Structure formats: structure tokens, C-alpha cells
Image 1 (cartoon, rainbow, N blue to C red):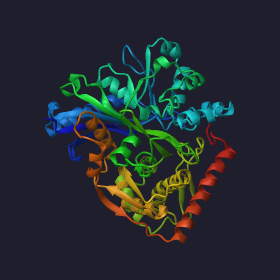
Image 2: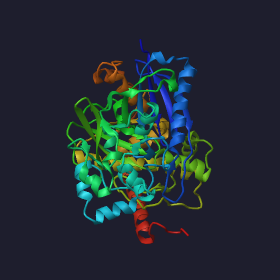
Image 3: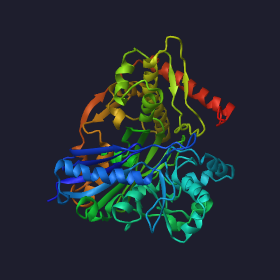
Image 4: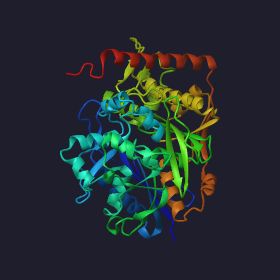
Amino acid sequence: MSQYILALDQGTTSSRAILFDANGDIRGVAQREFQQHFPQPGWVEHDAVEIWQTQIGIAAEVLKARGVAASQVGAVGITNQRETTVLWERASGKPLHRAIVWQDRRTADICAELRAAGHEALFQERTGLLLDAYFSGTKLKWLLDHLPGARERARRGELAFGTIDSWLLWNLTGGACHMTDASNASRTLLYNLHTRAWDDELLALLDIPREVLPEVRGSSEVYGHTDARWLGAALPIAGIAGDQQAATFGQACLSPGMAKNTYGTGCFMLLNTGEQPMASRHQLLTTVAWQLGDKTEYALEGSVFMGGATVQWLRDGLGIVERSADVEALAASVPDNGGVYLVPAFTGLGAPHWQPHARASLFGMSRGTNRAHVARAALEAIAYQSADVLAAMESASSVRLRELRVDGGAARNNLLMQFQADILDVTVVRPRITEITALGAAYLAGLAVGFWRSPADLTSLWMSERRFEPAMSASRRTALLDHWQAAVAQTIEWQRRVGPDAGVG
């Protein structure tokens, strides 16, 4: 009798493996960070082989550390950083280039050319996405354009494209499965939400051969089995979802009108909109939430590029904290931000602004400003960005949110969560288990093999750990948001005036 589900949570800065039991409780965790590569300003890359090695290494590690035999694992679920793009040889399994990460902005000019040619409305209507460098379609085009002979090899069927889920599935199955699920496919600029298939017209506009693409499957089904050499047995791989969709599932936001916000490297807010895709408005995205059997559910999404990564910048870029966890105490050492506002547009601005060339700005400093004010401004910036997204989401959907379920590493920061509730004027609810992205992948895999019977069973497993109630006056909330909006406007205006390469060279 299976006792566990193994979730592989492949994120932007680390690979994780988590064992869950039938109650959705964590029974083992292993994590390993991997290297970030920044070859040019605005470019972000990962070594796909390193991602695979760290992921399979910790999967084996967590089983060994907990004394769990492979026979006790009912299934494996995969959740992944979305949009990050890998192109590899089918014969050798070797990547042709480093993975181009979702944060990477190198294809902003490709997007601008497509917009200038009048194609944006077509892409948005078919895919629910905006023409932005964030998504993997233009990243794949860039690889095919810049790697000698790659497009011709792709047409001959020699190459395989995938987001990280596909890359892991390929390696786990020893090259037997080249697949993705509908949630990841819907983030490529190549997948038609209405036909639920790759779109030939969009492929032609980007000059991408269909032969390079993975097969699109549901989010909860058996795709294949792990090669027995990896974990000691051939285990069914039975759930796949992009990290934000998996988090929404793990948060049990299974009914229309429910929403969650994940505070990871970026911040990602998703609102369940049911079985019909809601047309994108207010610079939000329409995306597949998950596909269970023949039933597809959709979500509205707002994506913030710099969430927890802003705290990493405080640690690694400025050196004002030694550990990311130290930022809460530092920020709490001052009563307020001292008039300091950080707009963390280090890799452009996401929803609802979508300014790919914007760069970070720090406003309002005086001689009295110290590192605690900067730390507090950085935390508050995470909340302000999410407030911008929620305002757009409520306007687009006509839904007034009553509570926001939160997860991710930064959701453990009580100062941030209270400020988020205050600035949103909405109750923020943190679940008992904050490893919710991995839990969503586990749920999807477990449903496919009968470990859990139905999505309704999962709702009863969700439990809150703490509720943050708004306590800020309306006048103070309005003033803070006005100052934030002024800082964002000035950031965008500065970049408009000086261009994307200001100060370079």
C-alpha cells in the first residue's frame, strides 16, 4: 500500500523534493540551490543539466534520509518554474544552450516587432497572453534564430523544446516521454486556449516547427514511469502543473472567485474563473489553471517579476543582510519606511504595467535614511506590486475579493503579510502548510493514481495557520498607494527618457 506522494518542485533558484502523506502533511524535504547566470544586463540563464542533476539528486536524497523505499511511493508529481525554455538534442539528451529563464528580457525587441506588425491582438485572443519576453515562445524563436542549423534540425525532428516540466519528464523517463501539461502549454504564446492545441498560425508567425514541440496532456494522469535507476523502482509520474497553477490547486482554490498569491522569486496572483476563459483585460493574463480529464479550468493571473528576489538583492547585491530571513527584523527596527520607496524593476515591470525595459529605482532618501528603511521599502514594494495586480483583477472580473490565500517563502514574513492585508484592505490567510506549490503537484499526481479520491477530498485537508486582518486607516492606505504610484510613474518615465541602455558602455 502506497504511503507517500513525491513532489518535485523545480524553482527559479533551487530544486526541492518533498514527501507528502495521505493527510497532505510533509514527511520529508530536501533542497539544493543552483547557479544563476547573468551574461548581459536583462539576460538570465540556467544550466539545464545542473537543474536535472540537483532535482534527481535531492529526490533520491529525501527518500534515503527518511528511510522510504520506492515501493512506498504511489506517484511522482512535477511542478516547475514556468516559461523557462530548454532546447535539447533528442539523440543525446544534451541541451544546445543554457536554459533561458522566465525573467530574461532578451526577446523584448522581437515582441515589439510583432506588436508593430499588428499581431498583438491575435496572440492575446488565441493565447490569453500579452506579447512579452516573459513567455517561452519568443525565447524558443531566439534559440532557433541564433543557434546555427537549429531550425532545420528542429524541422527534421532532431531537437526537442520544453519548459522545465518537459525537461524533467524526459530525463526521468530516460527519453521516453516528450510531453507537457495544459497549464504549462498555456504559457508559451503558442497554445490556443479555445482549441486546446498548438496554434499553427502563431507557430508560423514565430517560425517555430511543430516537430520540436511536446505533446500536450492533462494535469493529472500517468504520463510514464521513472527509469528504475533513478529512484530504485519504476514510479508513475502522474501530475504536472506550472508552479503557480499548482499552488492554486494546493491552496484548494477550486471554485470560481477564489484567489491565491504566491510570494516566491516573483509574486503570482491567480483568480479561479471556472470552465470558460475570461478575456484578458487591464493587462492581466488568461491562463489554463489545470486540466482534469476532459474538464479544463481557467484563471486570471497577474505576474510580478521581483518578489522574494528583491530580498535576495538586499542580501547578495547590497549585503545589508546576511540571510534572507534577517530582513523582517531589520525592517521592523524602524516604525515606517521613512518616505523611501523602492520600485524593484530589476528585470522590467510585470502586471499590470508590462514595461520590459524599466529598471529599478529608489526614491525619497534623505541623510536620515539607513539600511532598515531600504529593507522596509523592499518588503513594502512586494506588497504594493501585489496590490496593483489585485486592483486590476477586481476591475477585470467584477469580483470583490474577501480573502487572499498566500504561500511561498516570503509568506512566512509576518511584517510583510500584515502590511499586505493593510494595503489591500483584505484578509490575508496563510495555510498550515506553506509548501503549497509542491502540495498541489502531489495532489494532482495522487488523484491520478487513486491516492486521493476526488478534488472535494482535498478541500477538507486545507487548514489555515494564521489570518492577518487589515488594521490600517483608509486615509493612510490611500496616501501610501498614491506615493507608490508616483514612484512607479517616475520609474517608467525615466526609462522612456533615457532608453534601455542608460549608463551602459
